[in-house]
Length: 278
Image (cartoon, rainbow, N blue to C red; front, side, top):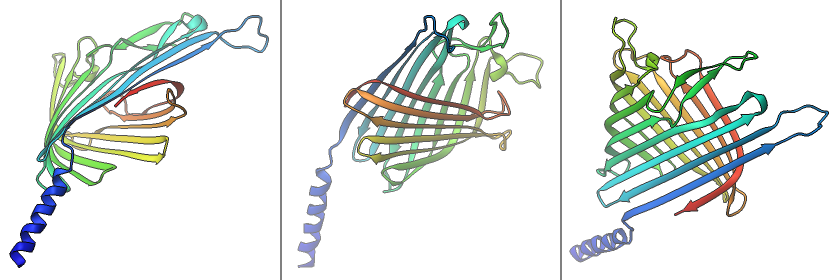
């Protein structure tokens, strides 16, 4: 009798497991924000401006019984024309990440990951002078960052996951070698390779029926200077006003002592058109 009950439990569990849908799932969200202001005989002051920002956020996930392969990507580019100051870039990033997880346990599983970050166009630092002079400080793949890591991932709940592992970080440059050069050597290095530890934590919380909060914290600590860490904390809140209109708030903080000892912060609030594919 006990044997019959045992097999019944196994068959029932297998039947419940078989109801899980495995395979590929894809999502894509694109958004376009436009801002235009012009003045004619306006006595209260102000500058004409025209700005746009375009972004794409997507993912492709292949979930199987014993493995999970998830690829996420974010692309953005924006510019603004500010009266006599000309055209200036307001947003620009390339962020691609792919993580392969082998399912051993319910919560803790080994993984391998590759992530890439760079930008599309040149970046400039503007001087506060009447000539509106600028100095180029970055470009496409200048710098570019590639990180490969293997380790263990932990996901206690669906909305939160974290992983830590041994990582190899490669920094590529061409003209702007501040990101890759080792000042202790006489030669100018255009490529820097560092071994270290990577820790990544991601959260995705549905605050309301039409409000989604996403957060991602990435920390890399090189073995040679373990206490000198680089950290990147990316946050976004998307509120869906209607089918094609979203309100987006983004907050990004970067701590990179190689570039500057100060914490870099970028914040943006936008209302624009959006198109989703699921």
